[in-house]
Each structure stands twice: as structure tokens, then as C-alpha cells.
Image (tube, rainbow, N blue to C red):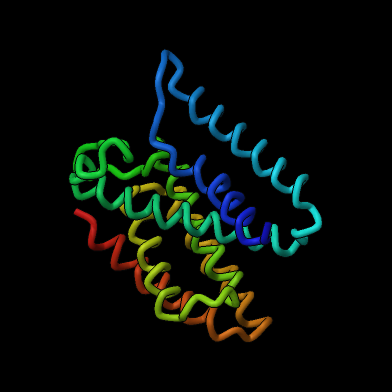
Length: 196
């Protein structure tokens, strides 16, 4: 079996807990926790079976890529929620009223933190083969998703991330990070001041 097949499953199991829309029962937090535990078990099982095919850096790359995918999917869901059209995604997305955005995490601060993790994956892993225009578009989508949440925690995280990225860029002279930093910085005021 090639390394590609286990990598797809690892990525799927890393993304699933972040985008799982299903919950049930008297304690709605139980289903997401159980999903997360099963996914972690599956990832550990895949690593145990195919341990010779994965290096530490490959595992870190898959984790960063999975966070980016989960953040982008959540940002799209969050924007559907914010604009009041989340019912179009039912049953694959939680339905909210217009002006609310929290993705499938059901909590706006966690959702905002996920979008911050996604842009961090973009900023600090620029050599993954993603064209610059796609990376900039992804950063802008994540910024709008973050700010649709109206989370002060998310705003503080983005400001801190922009400062860290600026220091990182200054130290390592990476042009890719600079372009993403500028895209995120431009989307920040547009999102904040464009909110009703």
C-alpha cells in the first residue's frame, strides 16, 4: 500500500472532529468528544501500522494541512451561517440565525480560534506547494470567517498572529509570509468596519 492512502485517512480523521455537525442526547457535547476520541484512535492506529512510512515532519505537515482544511471548511460554514443561509447546508452544518457564525463547533470563540490556527498553518508552512494567489484567498476567507464570529478572542488572536508573523518574516525573510500577512492585515479592518 502506498503512503498516499494512509495519508488520506490520517488527514480525514484529523479534519473530522472539527467539522462534525452531528450531536444528540441530553448532553450535546458527548457526541463530538466521542468522535474526537475515535478519530485520534484511528490516527494512532494508522501510524502504528504504517510507522515506517511516516516521518515526524510528514506527520506535522499532515496536521498543519488538516487544520488548514478544517479551518477553511469551518469558515465557509460560518459565512453561510452569518448571512442566514446555513439551512442550504443542512444536515451538514448547524443552522443559525443571520448574524451568528460558529461553524460546526457550536461556540464562536472555538470557531474563531480554529480560523486563527488555519491562517497560522498558512503563514508558517508556505512551502507546501500552494500557489500564492490561493494562499492569499484562503487567508482572506479565514479572516472574514473569523470576524463573522464577532469573537473578541478571535480578534486578539489575529492581532497577535499578525505581530508574530511580522517578526517571523523579518527574521527569516520570507516573501510568501509577507503577502499572506498583508492579505490578513487588509481583511482585518474590512471585516471589523464592514460589520453591521
